[in-house]
Length: 283
Image (cartoon, helix red, strand yellow):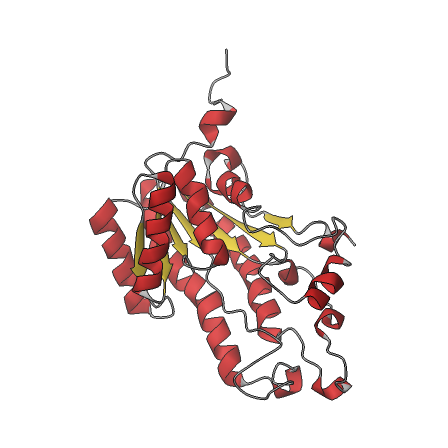
């Protein structure tokens, strides 16, 4: 027999009937988040800037797991667009149970639209890029939480999962981005905005965790490490030397963690920052 209020481990992961909104849903990890919840019975709503990309990603999830899935093109930096998204989700599905704030800009250090070679350096970093990165990564998370959080609070239950980064917990080791033959002043670096946005999401997570806790809405953050995505060999070697497991993450390796954090399996987890980085932040 189980004690009062207890549930089976298998049952705790069941997401049947739940609606999960995922921003950045057509991206490398966004699609995987959708697959994770779809496999457990939820309906993923993949949000991306372009409707075609979002819809195509939802189609792939639907074909793989069956059940319902949808993709909507929404500019999450626009309050009006986000409010419209909430209404669209309610009109189509009647509820929202989970919000995964996954969208982020991640400018590549090896190439950029401004100063070739050294545009990423702090002393040269364009305000335009800073503002765009904050608009998507932090303002977008704020606007989506502001829209969907109250709906979950009214229902008395819900989860907000913010996707941060190991670079929200530690500073980037700029040595892994270095190029031979460049001077110190022209070496590319990991842009400052990425680290600050991800650290900001961690603070935002803790704020939300206390703000809506009494209404049954939990908020946590996942801080993943780097994911294999065809990076150049020299970079991969330098990065993996900083990781105790000696490798980057495979794209599917965060799916089970996401499933745990948005399901009842993590029902007593609130305000937690889960570092999943192969041990990089342990060194």
